[in-house]
Length: 341
Ligand SMILES: *Cc1c(COP(=O)(O)O)cnc(C)c1O
Image (cartoon, rainbow, N blue to C red; front, side, top):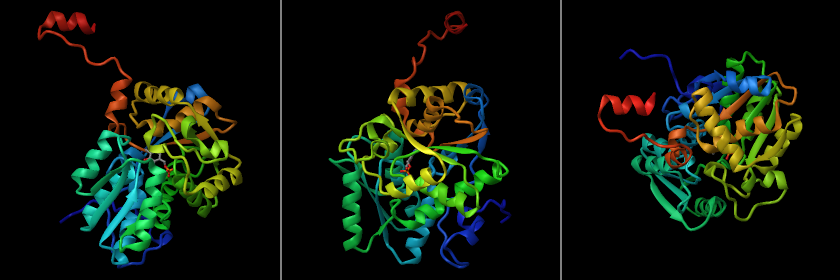
């Protein structure tokens, strides 16, 4: 069979990843996501801004970058099951890669707080989905304890292979921007992704300012202390006690960046702006990067990349809450013309 040369991340970047030739590779041909210019956003902030569309990954979020590596490594170690706690996207991604690997996926999600699309994905891929009456942070404590005691591999971003896989996004950005990037704007939840980007940039000797943005109701890195009951419309970053706290702070400090909070209102404004003005539909958590850029400005940077971490279709409920809705009309020419023109 003739095949397009579009390998997944492990094959593309093997020399920079902890995988040898012949190791099992579980891939859905993740990565290679578009970087699109954002002319209207650029005009608003007075800098050249690009959007890294991580929602174009196989399960619709950047989590696939870390899941190809984490599940491949789990398979290499002989794992028969993988587990994670998740606000949704890690669950969807784990479920897909576990299915691909032919092993059992198990996910813990916070009851009632997971976006509809993510839940549908985790279930249809065949994972065991357990809903707990606690938040993400409680879920992470539980899965850590389970993985310590049982032959099941933990693939939350405390797993080093996740960070290794996710750092490939920096490699791609540098290729797509020809190495010229002054600042990166990125939403921060459990802080694995910003840690991974910084690692990727550092390995290439490039040091853009790392600007992390948290939701105001879930901003432990901004306040300097864990948040007991994190709340935000951006469910993917609804995390009160990030696992990669120190590393994220190190990345921002070392790069001359910062961590800031954006309100849900600012997040939703950016979310609608991206859809209507740039034609890019991301999920609310992703819009935190652009909300932060709009709120705090370019800060002298000339070329900026905003990471849009997940696809807007993940969370149809939030999208529908932000629009006027459909126009009901009789199936008659005149009625339709007068309704829309
Ligand atoms: C996981 C996730 C984040 C947060 O990434 P962390 O590595 O937890 O900081 C942001 N946006 C989306 C859509 C996510 O799925």
